[in-house]
Picture 1: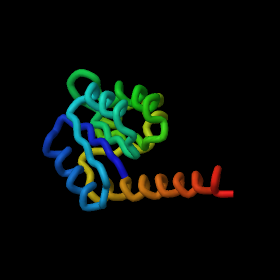
Picture 2: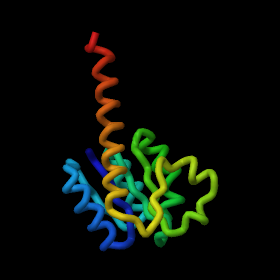
Picture 3: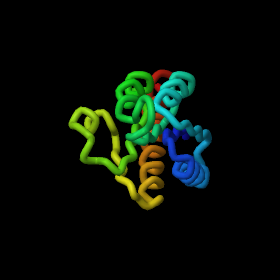
Length: 132
């Protein structure tokens, strides 16, 4: 599983990356801005992208719709202490919203759900062309 962690807090990004590594993720990339997230998503096909909502420059909310367009199959998870700031459009675009503070088990649950989705997609693809 390939994930991109987008957070301007290096401490939180490192914590999430370590949890993802323990979960057995194949590729874990971290960036500290929405701009860098968009650039990385153009270059690599991520299964999960986590986005801090409040960052300098392009925020996680602003990057969300661009990332949905660039990587429509990626699971997009917003991480925020400011759930009340999220409008309906943002809530519809995100697959999951994780409210800070949160226990790392919540993130592991998101990783597990993402892994199950990725595996089901692979199974479905294997039933298609060549699977007949």
